[in-house]
Length: 175
Image (cartoon, rainbow, N blue to C red; front, side, top):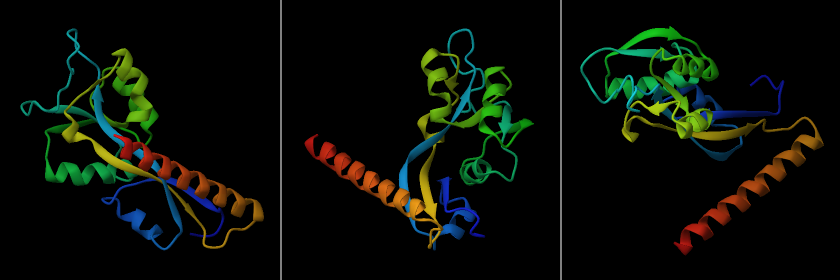
């Protein structure tokens, strides 16, 4: 906004109103991410704190109220309330992950952050796919970049993104 940087790499979700302030800026969508509810498994490998079981309060490791993920999650929870009981708050996904690994409760974390722990069984999904939040990964730029190198970088990323999209379309047509 202030012109102090040329680029902003961020997650995007329609429920996060602040992202709409970036609408006037040139943007490339670089990928997708999913925030998924995870927790430690019990001794039988099932979620220690299942969110699909609507009975008792669920210990919730929250992002608080000001982070991107908090806003994205708020919309889903307003439409599909859960008996979440906040037990810990931190705006950083990596810190929430540490608390989840310690058995502190359920947190919605980026899939890329917990992929290894899900594969190893150290963490499990706390709920069905219905509880996932789909996110876009976007790169925004200033309308006028400050250096020729920044413009070259933008052009190169744009070429890579176009080639990736064409490759994806070709792959999907073969199926």
